[in-house]
Length: 108
Length: 122
Image (cartoon, rainbow over all chains, first blue to last red; front, side, top):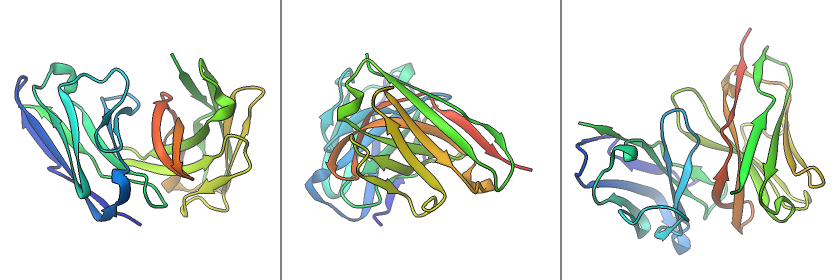
């Protein structure tokens, strides 16, 4: 089973600042088969990226995804109030598909 | 806009059973794989089960294998999760999601329901 470790656990930032979230896999994720999701409080997860860097429909371009192999990054260039949420990565290369434990982006 | 709506959650005693439903609308339900993902209180996301578009293929996490059954009725655009022999660690919000398969049963989930809460407690 591929273990995904997200860091940091919590990121305290102000609106307008840049957020950089990391997702590290315990073994290589082939073809960059990794997705990112956003979960706002009390809401369902929302797909942000698939294939590490392919933006899902309706996702603003201040969000970007990158990486390959074992190291992946989600970047939010300028935080908007609605971006304060928990973010999860998911690998779908190997069974079972697994999620990271999440990174909470909170208002500083 | 594609939508999913779960129902059937509630309070059940350990050892009991519950059947969750997920009604789909505004997309071609019968051509997509579907999945259940759960989230225990204050915890992260855990894949539970996936079913192929024709129900010929079903997959389960080790934690629920032998206790949960997944099924679908494409004529009713509805997905189901039958949960038997429930344990306290099955307590979670259960989400259904539409899956875009890369290598069955894995893929990314592009449409999610709002979830239904299951509490297993005596």
